[in-house]
Length: 117
Image (cartoon, rainbow, N blue to C red; front, side, top):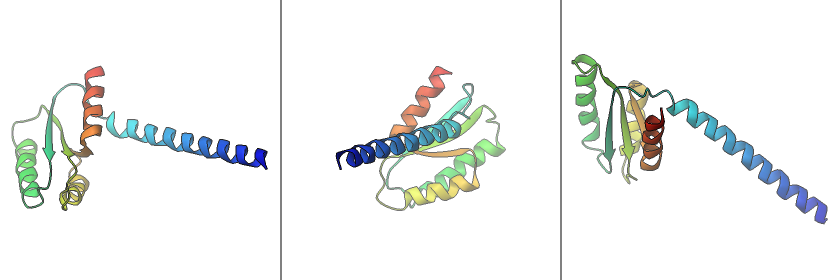
């Protein structure tokens, strides 16, 4: 019985470790596409469901059709919105590949990775 419990704990920890490795690999492939040169536009938002879509569209219009070729990505950090801001951002991320939606902790990690490049 003790051997069964120890094996169960060991396999549970092994599966958890494997899932964490896969999660980290996916994170690296998602956010290491950012180039170290250029300008990154970082926007921190919280509970802005009425304004965020219009604001982002005006920013993207300037970047896509203006003379801002040095801008690489627009990173939007959601600071724990309680309304539908996060859903609006995720919808816009699908339409515009320049938008990267993260939370503030992931945004800090992205900035740290850019500094190391």
